Image (cartoon, rainbow, N blue to C red):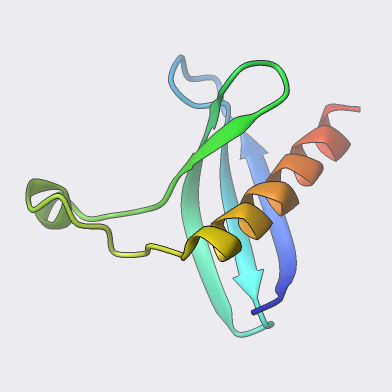
Length: 84
C-alpha cells in the first residue's frame, strides 16, 4: 500500500501534539491518528479505536510494522513541513 497523502492538525493538548489523517492507495482513509512526541526527533502514533475495543485490548486499525513505519515517516515529514 502506498501512502498517497498525509494531513496533520496541530492541537494544544498536553498528551498529543497533533491529530493526523493518512490516505492509502487513494482509497482508504484513516482519520484521527493521535501523534505523541517521543523526544525531539521521534513520534509515536496511536491509531483510532472504540471504547469497546479498548476494553478488550484490541485495535480497530492495526498496521503491520512495515506499514506503521511508512505512515509514521509520512506524518513526521508533514509535521516538519508544517513547523517551518
